[in-house]
Length: 68
Image (cartoon, rainbow, N blue to C red; front, side, top):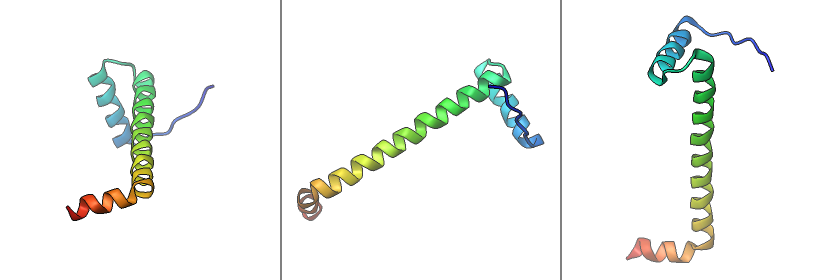
């Protein structure tokens, strides 16, 4: 799918630096950045889910550990 991406001058510089750092074209660097952002976001969501799970399912245990 083709799309047009409008970047500010500052965003263009950031993309150019990232492309050089990763030795990729700007298009491939942008795709890599998207993949990295998605992976980071998924990790954060998974960690938050795990934290909520432990705090609800093991609430008594967590309270005892806090008091120890």
